[in-house]
Image (cartoon, rainbow, N blue to C red):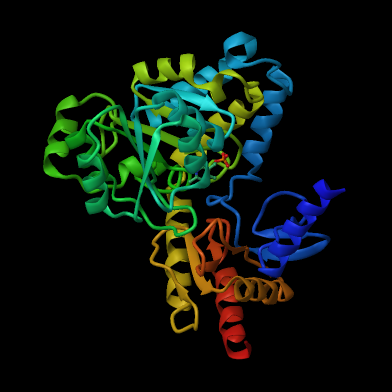
Length: 406
Ligand SMILES: *Cc1c(COP(=O)(O)O)cnc(C)c1O
C-alpha cells in the first residue's frame, strides 16, 4: 500500500502547513446570498461580477436554447458539433471586442493551452509575467517553447529579456487584470515592446471582459493611448476597434465570470483564428460546448452592452469597500477592480480570518500558495454589481470588529 501511503503523507504535510484544499457544497444558484453546506451566507468570492449567473433573462435563454438545440453538442466543432448559435456568438463576440474573428473554446484554461501550444514550439520563446494565471503557466510548459518569466509588470526586465532573444517566434503572455491581485497589466507598454521586438501579445482578459472598457468591451477599450497608436486607430475608421488595436494582439476572455455562463473565446486576425482551427489541440480534440449555452451567451452579451448602470454600481461599491477598509491591520492590495485582495501573509492567519468571517455569516475565500507567492496569503474579496451597499458595509464592519478581537 506504499502507493496510497505516499499520497496520504503528502496530504498530511499540506494540512500541517495550512495548505490543504477542500470543497464546500453550494445549494441553489450562484448569488451574493449563498446557501453553503445548508447554511446561509453573504458571499464575497465569486467572479460573477455583474450578477448574471442567476439572471432571469439568461435562464430563459438557456431554456429556449435547450428547446431548440437539445442539451449536448454531440461532437467536436470540426466534426458536426459546430452549431448556428456557436457561429452567431463568435461573430458577435468578434465585433464586440473589435477583432475580425473569434473562436469559442470550452474553458479559459483550454483556450490558453490551445493558443500558446499552437503558436509556439521548440525554438520559440514565451515571455510571461510571474503573476499570470496558472493556465498560462501550464500552457507555456505544454508548448515546449523556452519560457522566460519577468517580475510582475516589470517592463524593463521584459525589454531586456526580449533583447537577448534573437531567434524563433516570440509570444508575450499576460493577464489583463491579474486574477489574485486585481491590478492591471500595462497593455500599451506591452504592445509597444511587442512592436519593437516583432512579438505576439496574448492578453488574458478573464477579469476585464464585461466589466471594464466602453460598454464592457474589456481591457482593450480602457487604455489611454500613446499618440502613434491613436492615430492609426483613427485612420482605420469603420467599425469600433479597441483603443489598443493591433493585429499582434490575441485577445482571450472567459464567459463564466462577468458573462455569467460558461466558456471562453479567442479573438484575433482571421488568419490567426484559421490557424487555431487547424492547429489548436484543445480546440480540435474536444466536444463542443452545448449550443444552448451559446444562446444564453448571446443574451448575456446583450445584457453586458446594456450594463452601464451595473458597472457604475460595481465601481461605487469598490470605492465604498476601499474607503471602509482603511486602518485595518491587513492592507488591501493596490487595485481598482472588483478583485480587492486583503493581504494577510501567513497561511494559517488567512484561513483563521476567513473562518472567523464565516462564523459571522460572511463567505470570503482565503487564497494560499502556490496560487499566490509564499508569505502573501490573502482574502480575495470580490464585489459584484449584485451586492448592495448595506452588504458591503456589513463586511467592512465585520473586518473592523475582527481586527479588534484577533
Ligand atoms: C478563470 C481564469 C482562467 C480560466 O478560465 P476558465 O474558463 O475558468 O477555465 C484563465 N485566466 C484567468 C486570468 C482566469 O482568472
